[in-house]
Image 1 (cartoon, rainbow, N blue to C red):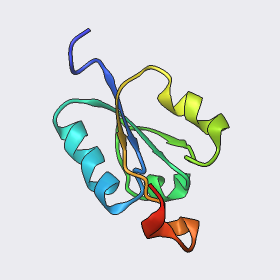
Image 2 (tube, rainbow, N blue to C red):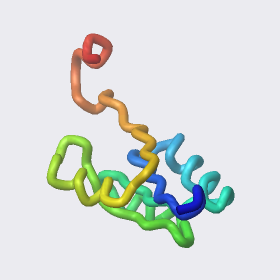
Image 3 (cartoon, one colour):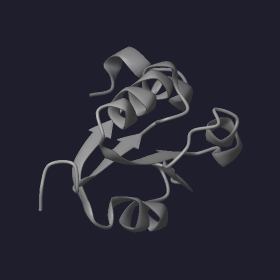
Image 4 (cartoon, rainbow, N blue to C red):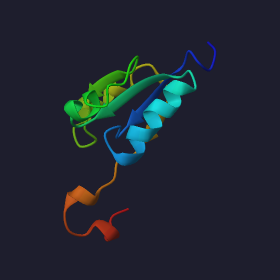
Amino acid sequence: MSASDSLWLVFGASGYVGRNMVPHLVAQGRRVRAAARRLSAMEAEGWQGVDQMRADALDPATLGPALAGVEVAFYLVHSMGGGRGFPARR
């Protein structure tokens, strides 16, 4: 398998970094899977040739399908939406 054949996952693809990383990887000829909690946010980007799926870091049932066949994964999810105490969490 060549590097361009491997599947790369951008988890958190609807966020600022993810929305910029996905087209960058596609432009490099990478096979990309984009995952986020809200599928509609990614669909609005109009990415061509990108496998888009709903996945939530807090829902373990969605993680297996998102990671299936993936060789490289970028985890661009933060915990700021988790409420008070964000700075204390690690």
